[in-house]
Length: 288
Image 1 (cartoon, one colour):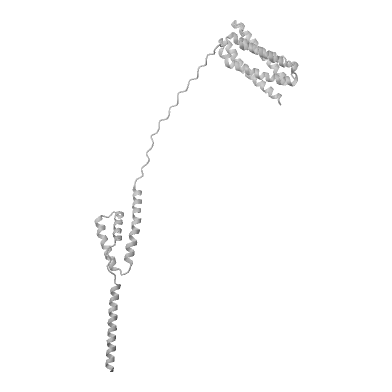
Image 2 (cartoon, rainbow, N blue to C red):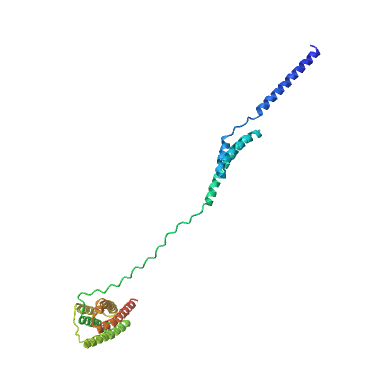
C-alpha cells in the first residue's frame, strides 16, 4: 500500500469517527431535553384551595391557574417544577382554611348568656298564734287548791322537825331551820286569805296523797341517825320540792279562780324553785 492510500484511509476513519461523535452528541442532547409537562391535578388543586381562602372572584383564579402551570415547566430544565407543584399546594391548602376559620370565629360577636328572670322574694309565712291553754278536766276548786297548799307545807314541816335530834351535818340543820320558817310563813298567808274570802279548805285526791306519802317517809326517817339520816332526808327534800313545783305549774296556778289566791300562788312559785335549788346544793355537798 502506498503512502497516499494510507493517508486517505486515516482521514476517512477520522471523518467517520467525528461524524459518529456529532451524531452521539445530537442524540444525547435530544434525550436530555425534557418534554413539556402537562398541567397537573395538583396545580388545579392549588387554585381550588386558594380561592375560598382569599375570597377572589372565580374568573380571576381560573385565568391565573393555567398560566402558572404551563410557563413554569418550560423555563426550568430540572426536577424543581414537579417538587413545587407537589409541595406548595398541600401546605397552602392545610394552613389557609384553618386561618379562615380562626378569623371567622374571632369576628363573630360573643352573645351574652340570657339572664334568668329574678325571682320575687318569698313572703314570710304568717306567725302562728299561740294555742289557747286547754281547759282542765276535773280542775280543782279554790277550796281544793288551799287544801293542797296546806298539805304540802305541813308535810315538809313534819320532815323538818326530825332533823334536830337525828341530823349530823350542820348544813342539813341550817336548811331545816330555813324550811321551817318559810313553811310557817306560807301557812299564815293561806289562813289569812281563807278568812278574808270566807273559804274553807276541802281535801281532794292530791291533798290526801301528800298526807299518805308524808306518813311513810316519816316512818323511814325515824329509824335513821347521823350521815344515813342526812343523805335520806335531803334526797326526800329534792323529790318533795320537785313534786310541789310541778303541781304549781300544771294545775294550781291555772285553776285558781279567786284573784287573791292566784296572786298568792304566783308569788309562791319562785320561792319553791329556790328551795329546790338549795336542797340540791346541800345534797351535793354531802357526797363530797
